[in-house]
Amino acid sequence: QVQLVESGGGLVQPGGSLRLSCEASGGIRSINAMGWYRQAPGKQRELVATITSGGSTNYADSVKGRFTISRDNAKNMVYLQMNSLKPEDTALYHCSISGVLTTASAFRSWGQGTQVTVSS
Image (tube, rainbow, N blue to C red; front, side, top):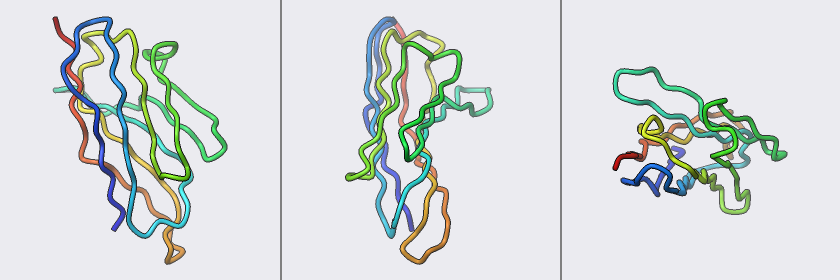
């Protein structure tokens, strides 16, 4: 029922920047945590960054100081600004949100992902 649509991925050179966006829709009453995760080929999915409804953020050590997560509660959107990108940032990036539906049920949903490739 809840749909997440990510955008903003692409091919970028090392040192470049990208901004990922994720829009949530479909029967949502409120959103609690929002986050970005990534999975590189042959590796497990890992947390990149999360942001709570109150704006508290958490980052993987590997992206601290380079990535910034933000959200727009009015639009049900979460963003990931990625600067100083490195080849090891190459992965499929997924957004994930948790919250409450209009039916009062709790939910957690995942997007299909947007590919980020950092290469010269």
